[in-house]
Length: 498
Image 1 (cartoon, one colour):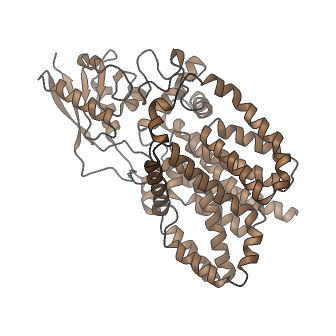
Image 2 (cartoon, rainbow, N blue to C red):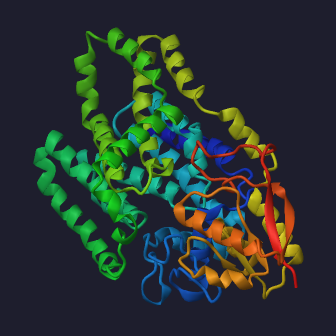
Image 3 (cartoon, helix red, strand yellow):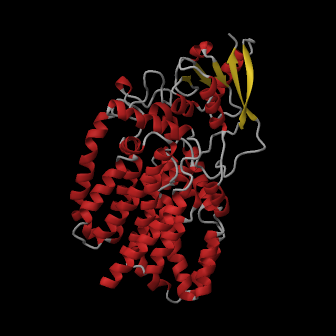
């Protein structure tokens, strides 16, 4: 037992050591993009106000036409835990891009570690646990999500903590309920929907495999739900329906989202051709397949139930099929794939290595390593650098889309296309930025309004030495740039002629 404990400690240390090399380099080299900057701005407001605000004396931090804010401008669209964590890092390390992303990277490292411990808690061998954590730390989409100033890696961390607590509960460990209640409550206070999905998956799984444990789960569930009452009561004055209600009842859109989520998982996480490897494993173990499933079904079945419920719930409620919503599914994929590859090793070591190779070659690891070691420049870096050099503190900037980074880096008065502010204020702006791309109807309308304004002839055109890509660099695999764009138009900014 002592030898086993020492092995777990040793491998945990090695996992953290390798993860540091993969998660932390170049964290502060790229500018924050729109969503990251919004999180940073709201987190910074805590340092002066004590609670998150969706505006300050100059600017609105809204991207939903003000729907995120309650009375007095208090931000209530998302739970506050991620903002307080980011604010704490700003307090300790200062307000920088590195400090903005550092907590997220650390939670990503913690998720890899929890993946290892969870696999070990299910009675799997050390090789399976190392495979699970290794696959997750080499999963580039997970690495990208964990290097964003947002809530994504915190969701994966508390989700894995909840799963680990639940598995220990099934094993009747003394401290399991405390771990389960704490992790799930924190998951709720990171993103409500994932906490709700986890509880539903837990209860459904118990009914299938351990119905006799349902009574024991009553008190933890009550504890978790009671912890949510203050937040639910406090945020009752805002409505998600005001922005996304039309999606909840559209079955066609939900079905398309579900298909798209599956497609993205196949494109960026587990390729469809891995099913061929699975088929070979099934054929190889066909005589002992029932015994294999019996030994794994208690825990592995939960992975499938939780993942399917996440996909179904997101398809019904999400405003779009963004890959980032799948964050808590990624560790589940790593755990299941590790178990399948372990069966390959049990059949023949070459078969196991073949399965591992199929997963690793699917990841753009060379591109990711290039990003960790090279300079990257996006449109916001060019715009901010120019404004730092030539703008005055009293200037106003109007921009069709991408206003949050300008607000974060410059502190100028910035009028954006998604804040819900009256664009008439842009008529007095000294600086007008019309982005080439737009990602929604409101951004297009703002672009057209600003174009009509500069056509009056009272502005001079300035070409900024930066590519006008749609985003500074967002986290979705299909949109992420590992290198500075060299075949893109330059950013255009207009200055009002005195």
